[in-house]
Length: 161
Image (cartoon, rainbow, N blue to C red):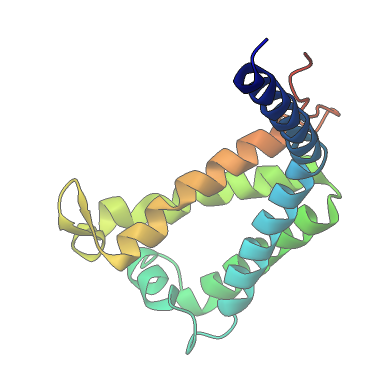
């Protein structure tokens, strides 16, 4: 074996060891980090809705949910989202928490249909800031699906080699 081949083997072995460590750590802690991060987002957005003057979503909600009294609906939504966040951060009552999350998500997409002028600059590709705010919910849905796959004790396992 040449010196270059030996050096390559040493680097590959070091890379493999480091890669196994990182993927093992991610498998062990990733779901918890995902759950807590998602919880922070829901608490943050939920608490903001208690303060219409600082909530960037307030006017969008008022224009979208015109068939309910927004002064009643928005505080209910604020409590709803805050409860989702608390459930995610604590990891308690995950089935109920995720049910609340998935029941809430279709409502977040309503402006795409009801207020297209507020979410599209050029349909179907150009999104306004509000449109981007709504479309990012796809990531929240994906995170909820991943967490939902673990409510019966499922975990992420690094590939054993």
